[in-house]
Image 1 (cartoon, rainbow, N blue to C red):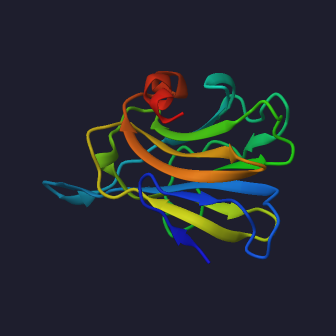
Image 2: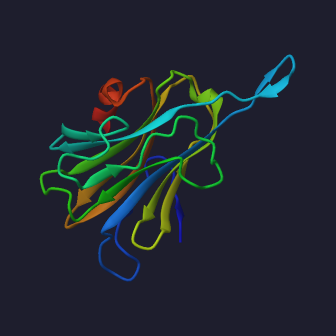
Length: 192
């Protein structure tokens, strides 16, 4: 059963029958919004990029994004860069896989961001979502949908963080500006 998350909501990453999840996929999907013009509506390709920043005690220690597809320890993996998006029907345009059992014990938070590398704002994006999937069986666990566009070029989407002996996911949905994850670091820090 999918939980439709609201901004700030946290869910436990425990399996319904007990036990902890072992592998999750953070999926990102979007479509270009049609633009009305003199000769009708048209769409322009939008290049959004998903990133995962790994933190240890509020300090960034690694990042996974389109230029560094696998974390140094191998526990987090990006499936590849999608330059146009467009699935928008619930499928993932970009995905980041996290093997929760392999995440080193000193990593206590993984923050997922999305940014417009080409600098287009979210006013030009529609049907954007972030979802968490149990990678062992393909079951969608949680979905966070971006409502409405705005004059920003990035979102701090969600974070997965340690909670006792397990993990939790928190939907953040915080608007930011920046073309890369480096540009977003000042906006990420208040969410740690």
